[in-house]
Amino acid sequence: MTVILAYLYIAKTKILSSLVYRFDVFSTLITNFIMVFALSFFWKVAYQGVGSVDGVDEKQMITYTIISTLLSAAFVFDVENTINQRIREGDIALDFIKPVNVFGIYLAQDIGSIASSVMLKAVPLFIVSALFIALPLPASAMGLLLFLFSCILSYMILWLLSAIVGLTSFWIVELGPLGHVKNALVGTISGSFIPVWFFPEGIRKVLELLPFVYIYQLPLGIYIGKSNFLDSIKGITIQFVWVCLLFAIFYVLQKKARNRVFVQGG
Image 1: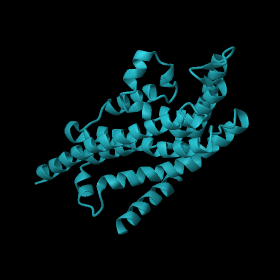
Image 2 (image 1 turned 180 degrees about the vertical axis):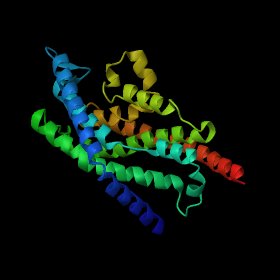
Image 3 (image 1 turned 90 degrees about the vertical axis):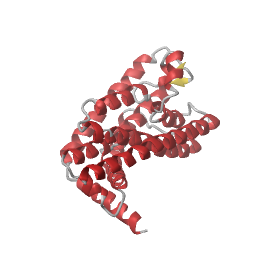
Image 4 (image 1 turned 90 degrees about the horizontal axis):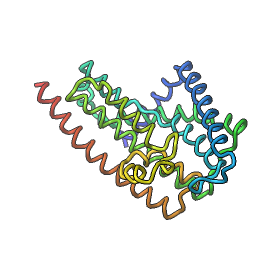
């Protein structure tokens, strides 16, 4: 119970510290506003004279775009940069001897960032989008519940991928372009901007074997009604499997990293 309270306090501290950076909040809001407007008008033009594509109509795609931008605003994390910075500054050993798990601390900090981003970025974007573009309602109440549960797993996949990339700093010290490569992959083949179901069938089948499409496309497909109940459950099950696989990789790497720090430290 004490450990849980400690993590909650860390998350609360992160929320309060996030409120200080008002310029970052406003700049992100403006960027997201521009993005959601641009993408919405893009799909309006693309769907002119077309009823639906792959079972998805214009209204669903605009809703997809709005909710995708909301998720991008909410899905904030700094774990890979935190790990890299702590290693570069030589403070990681101090983190390992703290009475709570160091990676639990990093996760709690990122959860605090999510809470502040939802309040300061996602909610205002939702209101503006509803007023000036369209009200992005879910396809059904059940779809909304499945969407929310799927989003939790989506974030864990994204966080674990970032943590794994961050852990490579124990061996290469500087991440260099690795973080950018990971972000580019997530942005391109996760369905964040363009759904993977619009890709050629061969490419789509390959991408469905990777964890990226389960970060954005799956929960968004559930939200707009693209996935029926059984497909949604199947997708969420695959998400859970990916969380377990990535956690196993993360667990092994963090064990090796901890041993590396203790051996080098004396």
